[in-house]
Amino acid sequence: MTSEQAALPRPPVRQQVGYLRRLFKDPQPVLDELRAAYGPVCGLGFGPVRLAVVGDPAALKQLFATPVGSFRWGHKFNVLGFVVGDGSMIVSDGADHKRRRSSVQAAFSRRRLNGWIPTIVEQTDAAIDRLPLAADGSASTIDLYPHVRMVVLQVAIRSLFGEHLAARAEEIGARFQRPQDYLEAPAVRQLPHPFPFTTRAKVRADRRALDAIIDTEIDHRRRHPSDDPKEVLSALVQRGDLSDAEIRDQVVTLIGAGYDTTAASLSWMLWRTALEPDVWARLRAEADEVFGPVGDDRVPRDHELLGRLGCAGRVMRETLRLHPAGALSPREAAVDLEIGGYIVQKGTLVLWSAHLAGRDPGVWPDPLRFDPDRFGDLSPEQQAVADEAWVPFGRGARNCIGFALAQMELTLMISRLAQRLDVTPGTAAVPRPVGMVVNRPTGGVPMAVTRRTA
Ligand code: HEM
Image (cartoon, rainbow, N blue to C red; front, side, top):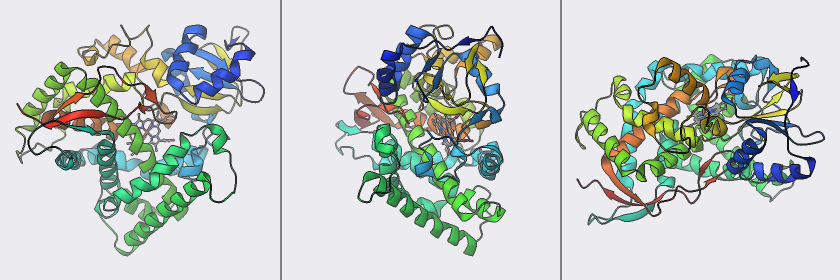
């Protein structure tokens, strides 16, 4: 530390409780307020509860470049461990984290991802075919959110763990529901206790049921070794450097971390594009060109497909800029640090914010405007500035392991949805966000839906 480094600017003590309570319930407006009053890097909390909110793109660049050992993810505030298990990479540090993350890393290689393109297109088509649409072509008002969630879950399980486990996707989705709701509940309701018949006890039972499903799969893999290079569970079983408990925790982690995040992002993409008919029409024209006519079996499956879906890619980037699935991501400072010119003491919970960086007025002209074209034709300098402030998946050694899969899914799915459906939202207003762990649109995605007519 040097004498030039300042203490974090922070609200007065009398306002702290209010800020903390609201931040963990409804983070986005509180983050915007904090930035307006104290800047994009500020402190919160008092006594043993010390927090630092970091949303300035330059400070984030510094944070992501800080050696990973300067932070801890297995800290006392990380409630995720209750659901994903103490052996999950998401709540691990040091050598354990490295071993657990590297055990599944190969599943996310570019070559393997390209192999998932047909699965994603086929599953999206199947979900569209299953929509309860009126036979006479009149519009049906449908909440698309549960449909989007189910297709994302199907894709994640099928592409990572194969057909055998995908056959149980609905059961798995149902077993994830209560744990996910529980993680969104106020912190006081998440305090550890052993009492039976409570929500916490039921969440524990859900996790045991998920474990039983995964154990059956592990057993199946041991009895029928697979040489499918895309299949993560077989690879985990064959590697032999993870215990069965650790394998279960990584499986639950990959499904849990990739499920609602991707579904919420696709929901925001549907809202944003349905509210801009011009963007929907451009997505459709692009999809017609790249995929060919609807019903054409010769849907291209090559990896160049994604490069040709430029409009869908820009829609994905612009939506995640405005609506990152995690408005805040936590890590604990394991040592005293300097971030953005401020002192951050050891033990501080650092909440870095993709929401604040994505709306930084110094980087993004007219930041609240939805404008996918802002990502077109950037000079290398502009690209570098935009990259620094676009961090929905984090960066560095602890970035999102599923970032490329998620981007691929979102790009392909919005493109196929725009090609095959006409959608009209019931309101002209973008919904308020809800969710501390996963930021999703309040009220889901209710829209008047018909099969494409023209
Ligand atoms: C739009 C979708 C997604 C978003 C916005 C997202 C975002 C994030 C963020 C912000 C982090 C934390 C980074 C940090 O703490 O610095 C993260 C971590 C993680 N994500 Fe994602 N994610 C998405 C989809 C996925 C998918 C599809 C998977 C897997 C199938 C996945 C698996 C993980 C895992 C395992 C971690 C923890 C990595 C580690 O601790 O080493 N995510 N994600």
